[in-house]
Length: 215
View 1 (cartoon, one colour):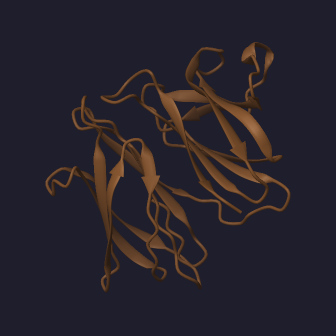
View 2 (cartoon, rainbow, N blue to C red; view 1 turned 45 degrees about the vertical axis):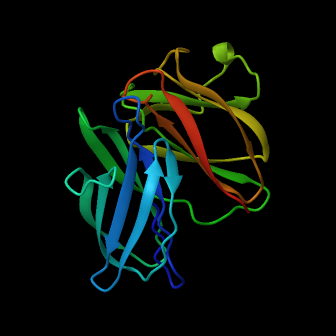
């Protein structure tokens, strides 16, 4: 979930990286309550992002449930969201193994002539990962990672020239691919978030999704 409380309305977005057991992908439903208004975002699929809820800066009681089952609570907590602040709630895990989640502060300001890229590691199959952003079709055997040893549920941010790239996660200090390559195209002034996630049911093979805000 992203939340942007500011002097204009905020935005909420949900990132679901929580697989359930096959063959049915997990969907989650979320509610946000500031004590005055309750807002809802329904049927966010695995893997995926969704949302946009507007409202003032406030303290929000937030609940995420699985598959429209009120007793299947994936996340419950309260966040105090300040003016000019935007966050993403990343939820991962399985119904059998348990869930993990974290609010992560978002990028909010586009950069002229460059693309903003945020990388979030959300695949429990790997405790930590290295990340590569390389030209499409590049063999990473001789490439240096863009970021190293990203723990689970952490993020990293970078700027890059507009264009097409391959995004790849590997096991730390190795060239053993955990997820990817995913070919992406990013535009100037765009805000882009890459998520790693486990396979349906949890575990390997991990994969990648991207959420893009156009300039």
